Amino acid sequence: MHAEAAIREPLILGHKTYADITNDIVGPIDNKAPRGWYILISIAALIAAYGTGCILYLISKGIGTWGLNKTVDWAWDITNFVWWVGIGHAGTLISAVLLLFRQKWRMAINRSAEAMTIFAVIMAATFPGIHMGRIWMAYWVFPLPNQFGSLWVNFNSPLLWDVFAISTYFSVSLVFWYIGLIPDFATIRDKVTRPVMKKVYGVLSFGWTGNAKAWTRFEEVSLVLAGIATPLVFSVHSVVSFDFATSVIPGWHTTIFPPYFVSGAVFSGFAMVQTLLLVMRKVMRLEAYITKKHIEYMNIVIIVTGSIVGVAYITELFISWYSGVEYESYAFINRATGPYFWAYWSMMTCNVISPQLFWFKKLRTNLGFTFFMSIVVNIGMWFERFVIIVTSLHRDYLPSSWTMFHPTWVDVGVFLGTIGIFFTLYLLFARFFPVLALNEVKSILKGSGESYKQQAAHHHH
Amino acid sequence: MANKVIYAVYDDPEQLKDGARKLVSAGIRVKDVFSPFPIHGIDPIIGVKRTRLAIASFMFGITGTCLALLGIWYFNIFDWPMNIGGKPSQALYKNLPAFIPVTFEFTVLCAAHGMAITYLIRNKTLPGMPARNPDPRTTDDKFIIEVRTADNHGHEPQGIEGLLQGTGMVEFNERAC
Image (cartoon, rainbow over all chains, first blue to last red):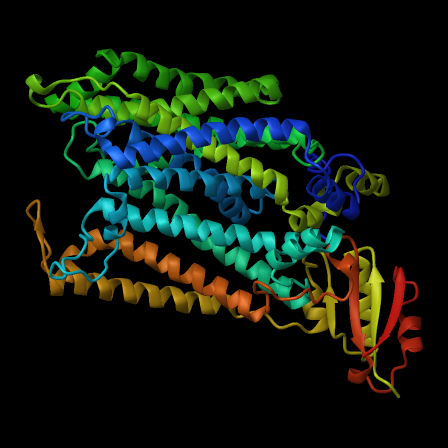
């Protein structure tokens, strides 16, 4: 067994056995859900239903119901798309990149972070879909033989790269997540007593046996998938940034975009993980597994990526002046001092200044403050996308076409709706799926569990 | 003599490894080991070979790269070259930089899904398959060594039990098979 240094803080608190871990996770699935869950899912489902209504209205009437105009032709739709894709980056980062770096603390959070990723990517994919206007022609984005020639899709276009990036990212994340879930579904299958549940989890577990060869293959698949998901996760937001960077709009046409978008994505993704986990660990009593140390580690990731984002903002500002291009300079001066100054300074405050408070250990280990900050970061990152998209467009080369963007109730309803759908899916996941990677947490119990570490320390003296 | 299958049950993966080592050094073939999580280091003891899934994944990936390049060449260079924004599609090598993102994504798509499907088929884990672990506790907190007398002529269950005494074994079960 891998022995761990005594000075490393334990990742599983108290005295837990393998059976305790099973019971702590399978128990809530087997028992009745607490009342709070019903209240939360009712609220989320109501918002989701309203949002779905707005989406259906939008599809039936057309995107003229949005507040877009001839100058600002991308606004909340693409802002929300980029925001959700960004949030969808933390899951794969945690489960793939931290696996390659052998970070054991990932094991308590990777399952729920990946669930979050998958739901966030579904929400993201909604926006380009409904933005097409004629969603029933969405299959035109794929290179399918057709009766126009055949006239093919343009592989030189970053919008098409996006189609491939998002669909690959979604399906690979889903498979990665499900392969990890199979052994845990088997644990539930073997633990629950009600016949219907046994049957359902039996089907979900694909007849998993857990023999030596199966585990060897499991570990190989996890490692290889992590290896290929790592460049994938970096490619996805790079490709999203190409949608802007390859255009000739001042404020978008910058080579800094790919790394800037990726670090922003990790930043916002970790913030959303914090928002969800801080509630979940409390409601489902997972404090022994998702410890303060886990929260602190994530806050450290937030401060690192937040600082990278800050450097990117300032670099961008400097280069716009240093380039000597009048239009480029104006785009940035307009951001900071024009009619959208409030959006720019909200972004700066939320993303650059406030995360620096996490340098104080007292604050980054404070759960209430962390929760507050996670919301602040999510708001800040939404504003970042809004600032990039709308402020670069609303004052173009001809002052006669300068406008402002005013969202309609459909803009607001669709955005709120995706938040509702996201939380509904997440709550269903928390109720019926194993929220911790049981097999992974068990494998570190005797190396990183508190009571086992204490025993090992006693043996030493 | 009827063939029997023997299950030695453990609470701890390290103790199971000790037990497996003892059996193997006594010349007994261990049929399999069942556990709730991977036991690192068990494979060389019981003679499980390294999986070739990574090689399969590489093959799937390379196939994806070739298919993507072939497809893009056919769609945008050969069949219907377009000139959009003054950027004509002239030759595969000239437009290659613009084709890299899709080629990369498609490579990953094929490598990941090809490997995942191979993994599920090789493990015989597919939707609707029945559970085949010998004891439901192996997905919870028990670790089991399976030995078949059919593989080990000349070894009696009693002898095997005697060998495993003192290795931390918590149960010893025999079943006819």
